[in-house]
Amino acid sequence: NAANVCPMRREVARSIALALGRSSVTSRIAPSRRVVMTDMGRLLTLPLVGRVDRQDRVWLYTRGTPAIQVYSIDGDFLFSWLENEKGCGAHHLKMDRDGHVWLTDLASHTVRKYTEDGELLLTLGTPGESGADGHHLFAPTDLAIASNGDVFVADGYGNARVVHYDREGNFLKSWGKIGTAPDEFSLPHAIAIDSRDRLYVADRNNVRIQVYNTAGELLESWPDVIVPWGF
Image 1 (cartoon, rainbow, N blue to C red):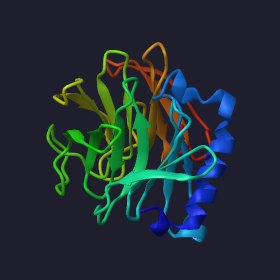
Image 2 (image 1 turned 120 degrees about the horizontal axis):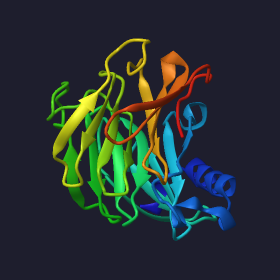
Image 3 (image 1 turned 135 degrees about the vertical axis):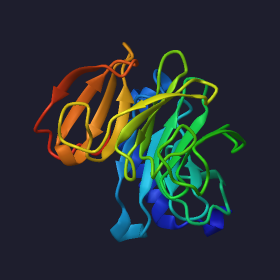
């Protein structure tokens, strides 16, 4: 209901839209490549993840209810879903080339794929259960989608690894453990992928970005990046 949406969020939506710009909305070209995270805790007491889609709509993923809120680029409320998402641990929102919405929820230990109108299509991880095997995640932080549809999850706060699934959600492999050596992580906080399917992992507490191919082979490491928290 538009009347129940905090007016401050309208201004946040407008600010995100202005930050990305009407004429340079990268979601039109590569919807999984651009994300903006804004810590609005002092204003809303709710962390927000925001992005602009190919229709110039501003999507907000919050730790309140409704968890998903969508606005026009001028800040007018359009629609929402996940109305009863209690205890949501919103951390990242991505969109794939088909317009599906991917949500990383560290509280439920899941990454979920939805249609634009909120129909759940796929769940990675076991809701409400943490773990470090092929069926569980532990407070995941972000995801990236390869050109073939494979999904790579930064399994981040509880585990220190990257988890690789195929496009149907079947577990393929994982790599990484806690530490400071190459191929080790200390809070992989975000992950992104480029047009050549190179993965960039924000190894936050190690103040570096580690670059991989989709086979999990380390290609480069960029040290001394101050607190790399998102892409």
